Image (cartoon, rainbow over all chains, first blue to last red; front, side, top):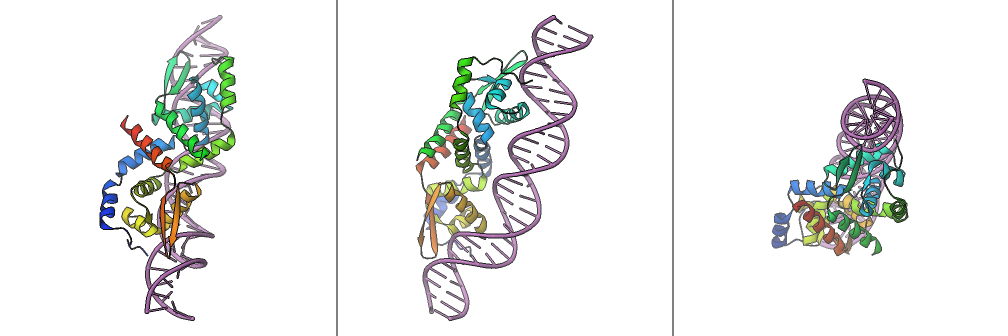
Length: 112
Length: 112
DNA sequence: GGAATATATGTCAATGCGTTCATATTTCTT
DNA sequence: AAGAAATATGAACGCATTGACATATATTCC
């Protein structure tokens, strides 16, 4: 029911040594959480085209302002976006081009 | 409270036209779901090193057989892995090298 | 200073996801 | 054919996540 069977010792050791630490696994899942929700993907793909304030983001995407704010905070905490304040208006933008890269990888996969 | 304000018409149209369709958004979130869970990441990173049967996967990673089976089914449905039967033993392997690419992008982000 | 605008936050209901237990299915062995 | 081994499946419980409403905070304008 739970015997390790076919793996030779070498490979087994290799795998056991290369298994990512629990902490890195956590950080990775946090990172990929960025992309695992429709609303967030929508927002990210919009921000990939142009930096935008919260209202515009909500308006263009037909989303609730509250929803957008919540998700922006999440994305901020995850390091996906950053913002810049100008008076009452706060403009958000993609922080790292890696974000765009990953989105493209996703699109690439769909084309497969 | 919800006026689009700062976006010029051109950009607004651009964004509205380039917004990914609901279906593509769904497919994308499905794709990224692959990477948004610790257990799955663990399994994928193990399979990135060597193809493996279910028992070995569970054994090496100290995971419940049932859990592994459930997640493998998910990964199979998402197109991340495929399998090969040999008698009672079923060997799973990464289906697409894109999976590895994306994992690397994640690691790259952590290094940032 | 007061009203209005832009954004953020707290809370909560609803939904979705992951794990586990029990059990089913498939294949091999004798 | 029976039992054992490997894997899959179904149901249920617990937990996290999402989005909506109400409200708070910050900033500008008059």
